[in-house]
Each structure stands twice: as structure tokens, then as C-alpha cells.
Length: 493
Image (cartoon, rainbow, N blue to C red; front, top):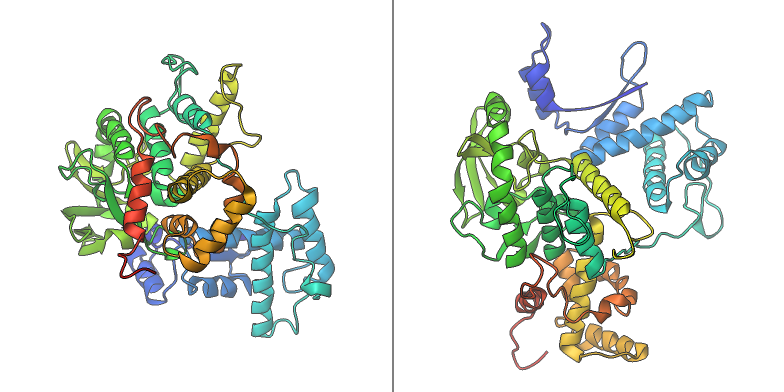
């Protein structure tokens, strides 16, 4: 069986058949509301659709899921279908023993077993798929029995918890300047550095740490959202993130001046060369790009041409896929509007950012000696910077309200008091809103870490961003968080 994913752009550009043109195929997909990324399962020999997998995939297309999520779900089911083929069966005929064998293979027997988080996603999807088969009438009931306490063969054996991994100041600077920036541990220039765009890596790290955004949020930023290219250099800024946010939940992002300064350094020293090299290539691909002719910073609207049609989009509502093909006329010709670009001229994808951090980790390991900070037990992730932001800001806001308090019971009493009598002033809820958590319960997991080493820092993120020795900025961020989230007092709470 072969797995493919729907891509209307590819069909429009490359499909050349006497029976159906690329434009007709793309129009048909649009008419049927088939989303890009929808999984398509074809038979190895006949290349005909495999049922009921294709019908299930079409149902996913109407669930308003992200393109990457659709592709991932398709890979999960294709993996289970392959496992069934090896057991001389198919997904419809799967029994409880098949499901148990698949779970053991994924979590115990394969060369690199998956963890609780990955299996939870797979098990949930398989359970939904079996429910789909029951609704269609292909199965009388799910193949997995419900045992005591609601458990079944798909349930993860271990309980899933948040994997919160934060960085110390020394670790962050080592990651940013040595791993991504190509310096020696003593801050000297490493002339043997063979990495790509060190200023881009350092700017990404400062932006991720300075805002607490998720990877897809900061990696897909557009220049106008940061006020760059609009004649407002070096200013802190605010913008709304929504389409690139988790679950499409809108929130306001505040970017401090030091993060802006680091991004501007990258835009001045490295980005122009990448843009110049790729201008001719983007010019040839103009038909496939969203070419912006007008930017309206006040309303956050971009106007331009896409597929030969005049279009306008609100930046907050633009998907990562649309942002990737958004360009404007720059100094050298067509230039990506994205903040971060790679050699091809467009924004780097998930695999590229993963490759950057893996290479950075290897450099840090190779250069580690007695003078370097202790590296974490696990290879660092971009998401660790979001966790660090949350813990530092939470700790700082607590100290602003109550000062330092070493007794754990007293700290616990304060949190209960915040939740009952001062909910709008509660640092926990402020951080929860700034991170865009769907529930404060997600933010509660950080509380056990606020008594950890991060409490020993003089000020939250003092001197973390920008160049060493510059003025602290996280006091400004914390004050700004209070300004945004604290309502005017009208006779008290």
C-alpha cells in the first residue's frame, strides 16, 4: 500500500493529463472541500483507493485539522495497516490480539520504542478509527474490550505528565552563542565553524525565549508583525497570533526590545545575502507565490496577488503554509516576507529547524570542557525556551507580589489565595494567558519548578537577551504583563 497526501498546489502546477488538467483537479478539490494534507491510500498493484482507509481520510479532511496533522494521522494509520499486512490481516479484521501486539511493537520491541506521549496520540487515533468503522457498519463493535477502571489495550501503561525542561542562564547562553552562534566557550570566534547563518540561530533563540512562543509561532513570523521594514527599528512591539497558534487560540504577543535588536542584527548582516541569492529563483516561481503589493500595519492586512487573483489577508489569520509563500518586492527583486529565510529564499521548515538544533547540540557536546555549563541529560529542544520563559516570568511575578519566601507551605497558601480572592492578579494565571494555555491546569505543572534553581537568579532574565552586559529586559516584560492583564481597580475586587 502507498500513502500520499493531497496537495492542490502540486496538482495545479504539475498535473498534465488529457482527462483532467491541473486547474480542473485543484478546482474539484476545492469544490469537494478536500483539505491539503488529506491522506490517500492506494493499492500497491492497482493504484486504486484502499477502503475504508480513504473514506476515513476524507472524513478527517472535514475535521478542520492542520495540514501537518492530517499527514501525521495518515502515517499512523498506514503504519498500523502495514503491521496488519505482516500478520496476514487488514485493519478491518484487526482483533484485540493484533492491537496488543502492535502496542508492544511500538512501545517495547522496535529499535527505538516510542514514549508515552507519542503512543497516547497513536492510541487515541486508532480508537477513533475503530469508532469510525463501527459507525459505518464495518464492525459490530470495537476490537478492544474495556477492562477494569476503564483501561483497554490501547491505554498507555504509564501516566502522561508534562515534560518541563528549563534552562539556566549559563546553559541558555551556551546553547545560543556556542551551539547556534558558532563561538568558542570563551566567546572567541570559532574560525572552524561550518554552520549556516549563526545570527539567524541566535535571533531565533532570543525571539523564542523573549516571547514564550511555540516553535510554529515564532518560526513563521512576518517582518511587518515585528515592525521591521516599516521604519520603526528597535522598538518593542505587540501583535496577535492565531492561525499559527495551537488550536487557533488567539492571544497577544509582546516582543521586548532586546529580542527585536537581535533579529535586526540578523536582518542586517545575514538575511540580505540569502535574499539576494534567491531573488531570481523566486522570480521564476512568482505564479505560485502570494506577492504582496501593500502592507497595512494598523489593520494588520496584506494585499497582493495569489494565483492571478487579487487577495487580501489579515496576518493573524494566515496559515503557516500561506506565510511560507508570501513575498514582496525587495531590494534585489522578490523577497520572502518571513523573518527567517533559508538558502532557497523561503522560511525554513520543521525539518530544517530540527537539523539546526541537532547540529548545535553536537557542537556543544564536542566543545564541552570543565569551563562549560553542565549539559542536560537529554538533547535540548526549542520548546525548552518556552518552558524557561514561563518559569522565569512566573517566579519574577511572584516575587513582585510577595517578595522571597522559602517556606513551601506559605507559598502554597499564597497560590490558593490568588485563585480565590485575586484571580486577575495571580501570576500563575497571567503566565497562563501569556502562553496561550487552554486551561490554567496546564500551567500548574510549572509550580513545582519555581522552587528550583531558577529562583536563585537576581532578576527574571536579567541580561539573558541581546549582548552580555546590557540592561535587564524581563522586568519590563513582567511589568508589561501586569499592565496588559491587570484591570483597572473600581473599588477593589
